[in-house]
Length: 303
Image (spheres, rainbow, N blue to C red):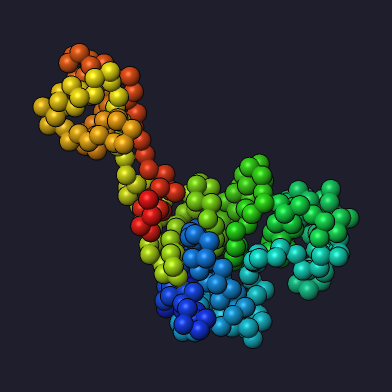
């Protein structure tokens, strides 16, 4: 499968400061690539280089096999994007904004504006000036502009900003449909890690300008830490019982017993039997799994 988005050694310096440091990544057709990082990690700068908005200091980016630069106008016929301010004309209405984009995109179908407003659920705001929209609806307007021309590539910078939980689910389902049903390559940056993990097929973690890890969802599942947490009325005795049976037992900060043995995690019922037979019936027996946020913080070296 050919790479739809590709960067090689992409670097951007502002004076002595490296905002992006030699980022090399690929996104294939039908993939949803979650680009994760803290605020200021280099996500938006990377996206602006991907879109030809700023020149890299070194390295290069390609979309659909073509080098990205401001003069390659034909490239943008197949790319939709949302970055920073989601509307171009704040004093014009939602419909007027979209109608301008329709004309700029040379789209002959006059009904496409109505269709995209329905898809993004902003038809009721069609006569409202863009500057008077809530942040969430402004994001919807920006997404409407990004997908109006049915692009093959969609590049989105923090598209969930300002959306309520229901709106986030709607955007998630829309992006999943575009990738799965139409083969659109979706590159989406975010610091809302838990949400991205629900629908991204591959993840890239950027920290202080460097791409520190790339992995798919299956790899993430295998790398996330798991443990069995146990509590009883006599944890000291329970710890001795489990230790005698060969389990590696730790006590965590809140006094709970922690077991990292694969057998204990896979079969907590065996631990329950041991403790009941030893006179220390559990009051808590729970498999605790590291979520994406915890995994991310561990990878970048934050507690």
